[in-house]
Image (tube, rainbow, N blue to C red; front, side):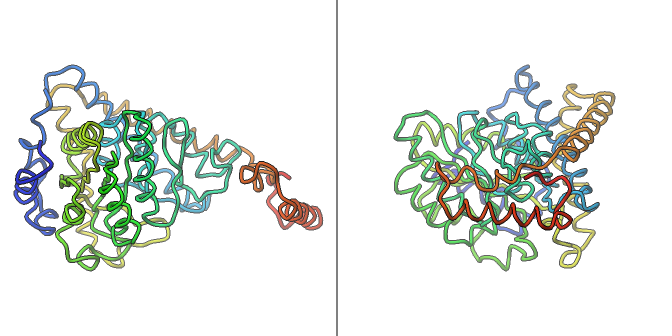
Length: 391
């Protein structure tokens, strides 16, 4: 698989002659380009493939029930990864645990692959005392020092320039690892995207920029966002090796990211991967996408182009999966998710003191005064505060 020069341009134009062609790409039409490095008879690959499929099903199931929990008023907000499960899981599988990940907000599957549990995800969404962020973040804003995942922040594209800095640090320390920044195509219109790419290119930082081009920046379609031929053109404009792949093809994403990682580290340079996909779900629970796009379009991508359904056919055709295993997986994952939600919902919230900790080594007088003021208000008006709120 080539990422530079004529070969890159050839692959991009053959598979996606334009943004419109990319949206019409048939599943697995570029098989030969992206599968040349995989031995399908290899037992190790069989294990990886089955694990990736299981992880995608877990991600989709968790999304389904947490989305419904928000609709029931049990959590305040949620964002799903429906239709983008392949990008999440396949890219994560191609990386090393030592690589630092800087997500946007649709990368829960990357954390799951690294060992961040469903219970930890639900704890964060419910903001309970076991939430790693101590209830300070919106739901789905995950992070984990243990798993080398930098905590998600809401402002768009801030992680791009940060990833360039993280990667340069890894290069200076000779860590043999890279930084990986995820973003949607909408965030590439932000200034931080351009600053981050330019910095990474000039400083030759080992970073992979993975863009999920899902066609929509909330309600703004891709043709109203920019006039370039997708995101690869932007990467090439900064002198960065860039490639476009079918983001609904698990093997295409896996092979592209694995090769990108090898080049980023061995050649000490940034790589950009544009994964073409479609956001099947609403932007978030604050959005109703049926107001700006036809339901038959959503249904087509939900069924005919589902990365989970496509990859299931692949592993089943190879004799690695059966209908019985499918039923067992869905049954077990559903039970796991529902139990996690029940546990997270029943857990008490973080104590009031956590609102003021972890910023200063020694709390300054003004924060002491704010804490005292809040305590007084709670004691004076206890009925105005939740019963599970602990001072």
